[in-house]
Length: 610
Ligand SMILES: [Fe+2]
Picture 1: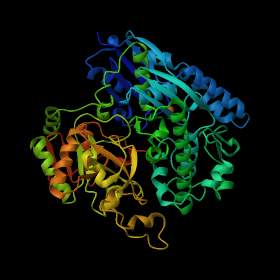
Picture 2: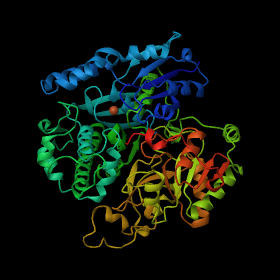
Picture 3: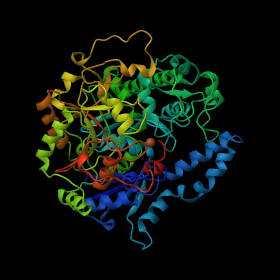
Picture 4: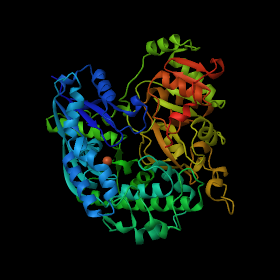
């Protein structure tokens, strides 16, 4: 009989469910994709329902449910934090107390009750795994390695904020940890907040801003905010942060160091924010590189697995390979807390004797991270017909050929194919695609397709076999989590003109693929092989036509909205934006053939700013 383990993350942010069958991840999805609430923290009813349907199973078939953190430990940390910060922390302590005394403290009981539902279904055993163990398990057990060092870095779970492990076979050995309130994730989030972005989602923006600045504050950060030891362990100077005391991340301690109050959300970006971003990025990279060297030394393993929110900071990952003496790096594509659901399930499954059957295949266990729901051409056709939506149906090969042609003539394409991605990146199943050679494309996509800030970079998808001709990468990067420089042969030698700074850098020609080249010449690359077969076929067709095996690949959504899941959501996003062409499986929809699009109210009203 198949051993099924259901993993859950819930009640904080990025709720998700994952199902593991005999040690193999078979389905995983974030609740936000169903509820349409970004980073939805509520119980992942829809994601659980999807995972069970995908496996043709019912709750009664599941051997165990694994929750991604230990609620009792987390409760003790929250209590101790507030007690330690009293009386300053009292207002936010009193705000949070009822919730903590109620369901949050008893999260596993809450899990049981949610799963039982009003009809009182029988619920399998519910167990809690440690938060960082869930991250470590998601990184190592799903990796292609029989043994490896494992590094997890995030904001905070229960107490741990940074952990080192050694994984061998189906076992994980805990080696070392750093504890709250000393947290690299919280340091990064403090700067995210100070620069006027939202904590727990704006960290990407800060990372995207870094190449526009110079790290002039890095020495000050090292001197006054974080004391980093040669082995990568660190202590924050907590007097300079507010997160122990109140509802905000930073206050006078930062204002005094960095020249006045924080930038207000949506306010103008100044050189200070660019330079703060560059500085905290440099400090973060230095710490992660030192930690990776320590992991290498403690375990003797030349291969490293990474997870935790900080692992999504792919710039640091690019430096890891270069500077930490690693032969290979594997980053869990759902490295944030959503991926904790999968890690908890894997940890529990292996403890109950499940093998790692993917070892020996040469690939990881993530199936290209395509673990979400798919829609067949029959389902897509039924939706289009029911709503009288005009389409052509050339079949997938025809779609790929026509889309390649349209992309080459400047079209922006909505690309909806196969199973949805698990994790924050679109990898060619729910993507918006464009021609990276077009110098105007980055700003067209940011301002008129995604309705987001003009500085934000786009990432390239490149045929795996051609990657080395276009990007300096030492290994594959199937999940768009490793940054490399655009290859010298593709770079333009234009010097940055004297005095050009900040956002004006965007207008300096950078490479033959400007839309995916960041202002510092770097790119966050997805190398595309047989794990993403439909994107691969399109890249082959685009290369045949243009000689360029690269496309812009960005997630299929607008700013503040979760990535689309269904054909209906894809169609709405297509009609609300300047996307020219929508490829839904074997169907092709052209904007100019669509009937006028009406909505009761401005759809943007319903989407909170991110
Ligand atoms: Fe975490």
